[in-house]
Length: 315
Image 1 (cartoon, rainbow, N blue to C red):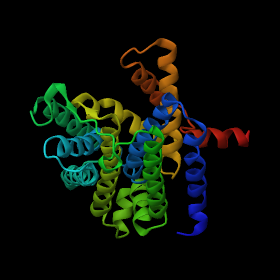
Image 2: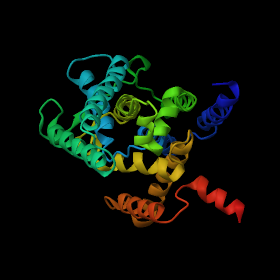
Image 3: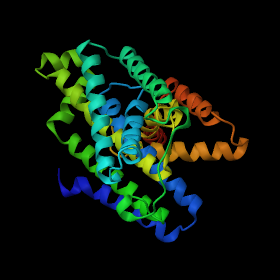
């Protein structure tokens, strides 16, 4: 990986970091922070689905695990949120490894793998809704204690920079993955799994590495969500909404590309807020729009924004 590879990421990070300097309204900063959290979850999905071709419908399992572990360690055990945040990432990665081991060892792929991940996310949602240590249906409320050492900041701008820093780190990781042997093997598996195996690629190990990394990144998004909003319940942490947005954002922005999840996340969340402003805060209206959008991008090529731009330029 060269400086040329990192230049677009550096430009994006520097320009985005200026946002809180010029935009001070809490509503817009809250929108920006939440968008970055969604972008982070989408970046996690992109490692597995975009580069590896293993479409998951249940990334909520990783998002919720990261969020709940970070929150439970604070509220139940009194652990500082910084190590709790790292523990949330690690726990999500472990869950990803377990799901991947069970699924890939059984030879699941395609729609079967997608349905298994969806089932795991739903099982976790039901368990979190019933368990006492997760707060049950009432959820978990993290105590408000606005101090930097407690990972709580008075300014939304600081949270924006934290979220932007995480997104930037994952952009670098993704770029490094593209240039690595593992990245080449992932693409080979995506294009033709049997051919990749015939060429000597350890398909099981490659896919297991991808889902573990993917789950850890998505778990970071969940842990950051918990720390920012200070409240969780099962429908938030393991809800269908995050699986849909994590999947759809890379598809819209360009799956298997470095900036695709970020572009798609910004577009999706903007569309969601615009839709709600038009029709009101009707529960689930954004998911309806996302469902229609998913049908359209799957049915009619080109399937992403970069593809639309390329087609327009050719014409």
